[in-house]
Image (cartoon, rainbow, N blue to C red; front, side, top):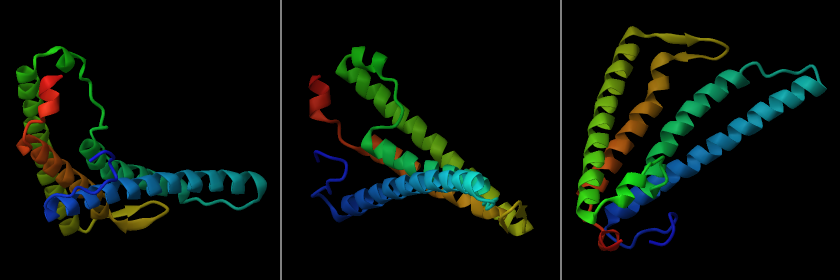
Length: 173
């Protein structure tokens, strides 16, 4: 696979998983672009006319959180997530593999705990029937859905990386 957007020629699950994460990255990019257009439109409308879109700041906050939770699994899948690997590059391949696997295990455990906690908070919020009362009014538990989705995908991606066979090329480097 030369590019991130290339579909793997392997098992059907890998292809669907690739398409899901690529779709998440694409949808996150659209959300970030929409947020930029929304904020710029509000600024232009306020300065050139008497029209204001009072819900833009609130919508931007929700879009920012949702787009971030969609983009994170895709970035991890691409290997473009924030990573400080200066010390890993100086290690022998065997140690490097040990630390890579350890970080994948730790990441999967942390994301699984965050997924579980997000589900519990969402169920509690839905049971209580809490509402967000700002310019936009909606059930409070809706805000947790992107976190559940994102942390679930992050857990799956960390597990996939953990169970993946070691790359022969990285062993030689």
